[in-house]
Amino acid sequence: MNQPLTIAALNAMDEDAFTASLGFVFELSPWVVRRAFAARPFADREALCAAMIAALNAATPDEKLALVRAHPELAGKAAIAKALTAESLSEQASAGLDQLTPDEYAHFHALNDAYGARFGFPFIICVRLNDKASILAAMQRRAALTPQAEIAEALTQIGLISRLRLFDAVTE
Image (cartoon, rainbow, N blue to C red; front, side, top):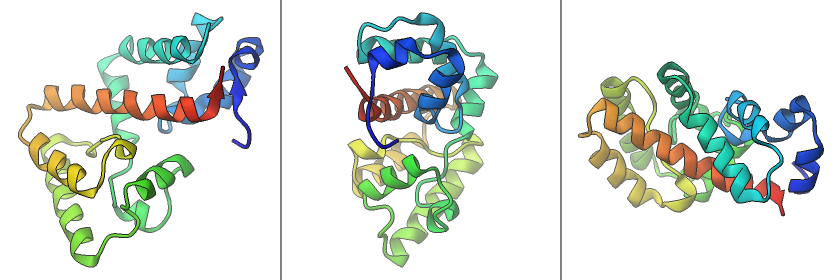
């Protein structure tokens, strides 16, 4: 997206244009944005963000799990191959995950593999609010959570990620 959208412009859009404009906010899951459309008009970015989180919270457990699984592994094969969404690529780079040493890549891959085997979905953290060390520490700490607690934490992190993406793209 080249220039920020305004709340007024979003409020004036039809559902398809709205979804096309903001569909990237939730990783490969524009259905969340589409469901938030019904809450228009939005007074501001906070209201828009709240509507999107409400749409996410109202989703079925299977829909939430699909959203979690739509996220890429951190410093995974897709990241190495630059086969991520533009947003994920930029976000991982912001935490330095695109410049890991071979040993750091090996450590991330081992943690990703163990995490994926335990939970059946990738580890999710708002990398823009973290650095390599805090991400690694969180991966190790959260591996001990129950699957239910970890899904809840992953959804919390998705909320943080989507908020940052939305606030980057939309102005008042």
